[in-house]
Length: 450
Image (cartoon, rainbow, N blue to C red):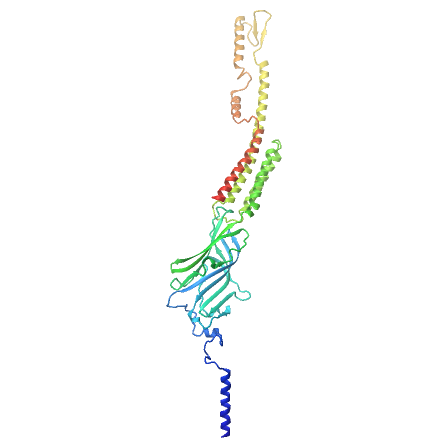
């Protein structure tokens, strides 16, 4: 009997001790002050293969972006490489738990939850950062809202219009679409409109500056249906200063260098030829180097091609100017030599060209050399008179002994004759700089303001 009483007493004391340790009446229930929810309890009965609101309407997924960097913009491949932080929010009623707190879940447990199948349609190459672990974040709020964030680096296509290169402005896009869920299953929206995108205002790029950006919501239509799409548009303006120092200034200096030959004597053939050929070859090298960073498949003419073509034309024109001036100088010297020869021949013909008359010893007779002695005196006098008259008539044209062919060649050469070939260089010193300045004004006005 005593043994039974002792056993009952021990059981009673044990029960009282247990009541002191667990005084709450809600043991085993969800209470934020006593028990924190665990992933195991949240996953109890959870099917990650079914989207939230299954058969109840589409899931609304809000998105926001942080542009960490734009690493490279390639005109050859027409794409850009960017590192972005993509954040997606949606509500899953199956993950509701009591309290006002949130639960941060390890990113490696993402395979246990349903997540949207968002992808970048214009992406050429992309990868998810995995150092030291995969850069993913999952946070579950008490009302069932899920925040899913990840860091991605992607190379995205951007259709560029390079007609005004390097004074161009490019508008690139970053598109986000759903791969398998159509608009009846999911709906995309920007969480805060244009403020959903951060980081573009603080980006520092080598050749570009971000002018503006805006967001839009649209739909992607494919053969399989209509899918939600979010688009980020951002305008990039190229910095011209780099190209001015690298291409425009050297080309201008080459054009000015080609004008130095206008102040060199035309008799210095090696000096002027060397300047002309050197500037032409240097300009050709500069044109080839400027095209190495541009796509070769496009056939449109760019602004930098127009300017380099203008500079090449002026440099080549300076070389042709010397060729023309040297030709006119040589022609002028040839005409002067020809003129002196004509004067010499004329002077010689004036002394010996007329038919000499030999006076006989008789006072009333004159006999021409080569005539017969039997001719009468009056006939000889008449012939002498006719010869003198004929020599006076033919002296301007044929008295000098030149043929009609030589006269015709002199008239043809006189058409291209320049009275003073040195005036060509004198006029070129003014015409070339003035024309180059005028063309530059038209060029910069057109490409900067039109």
